[in-house]
Length: 499
Image 1: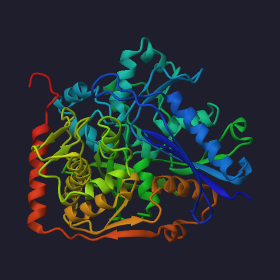
Image 2 (image 1 turned 60 degrees about the horizontal axis):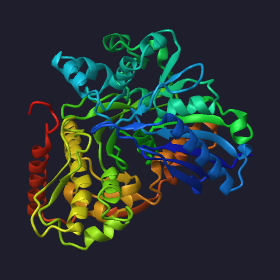
Image 3 (image 1 turned 135 degrees about the horizontal axis):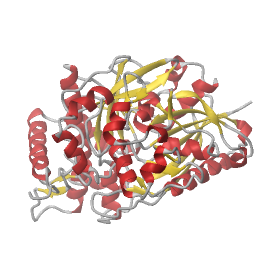
């Protein structure tokens, strides 16, 4: 009898394979980073073959650590960096070029044209999204425009598109299954979130052939099985969801009003709105949370492009920390940031500002600002950006959110969690297991395969690890937030030509 569920967590900078047992306990983890490519300022790419090779390697390693065979794995659930666009040849499985990552800004000018043509309401009404280079649609169009013969080949069915989970399922099944789930489809800016179909009018507007798109299905169902040669025998692939929706599911935010904030490469605040989509008037997007048991549930989402990657910037580019955990002690070694504010708009600003031309800046520098102040200001920027998103969500709802559940790698930083609680003036609840993105994928696959019974059972697996209670004075909070907004105003429109 199978003993484990395998979650494949395809992140932006690394891949992880995690085995969960019948009580949702982690029994094995394997992780590997993969290269990031920055061909020009504002451009971010991945090699899809490197993503696949890395994921296959960590999956095998996770199984080897506990001497598990394919028969020990009940099913595989996949969660992934969303919006990243991959186009490959159907016959050979070879990508036509590098994947264009969700952070990439190369289609900003085309998005401006759509907005200038008054297309904003059209796209938002059908897809729930704001027109922005962040989403997959304009990335696909760029690929078709810039690789010779690509559009014609796509029209003939010779080229396929997928976000990362679609690519991994294709590779895992030996090219037999071309599928996506509703949550990932809803991030492409091509999917009608009301009809649950690829929108023919949008495809026509963007000149994207429908033949290259995957079949969209529920987030918890049997998509197929792995090629027996990969793991010694076939393993069911039974769940898929975009990383943020997966984290919402892993946090057991099953009821309307439940919300979580993930501190990963970016920050993503999602709130379950139930079976009815809620349209935002404050710069948020409406997205599909998941499809399960014949029903679709929706979420309001606010995205921050740069969060944990700002800490990586301190480590890899500035080289003022040796590792990410070190940032906590360094930040706490000083009383405040000495008036220094970091706005990490490396790839523009997302919700609620939506400015692809914004760029990063360090403001308020004085002679006394040192390494510790800069580290602290960078950590604080994660909380400030999340504050802006949370306030936009509260405006849409007309009421406070209350306690926020948190997860993601940077949520293990106690300084950041306390500062976040102080800024939003609400409790922050961090689970004992912060791997909730992978856990959500495991839950979705576990439900489809019968490894887990139902959502009520899943709720018992979510255990609170720490609760952070606000303690900042109101005047201090107001001053810091005002200065943050002053700093944000300074970076807007920086990269726009002619300004």
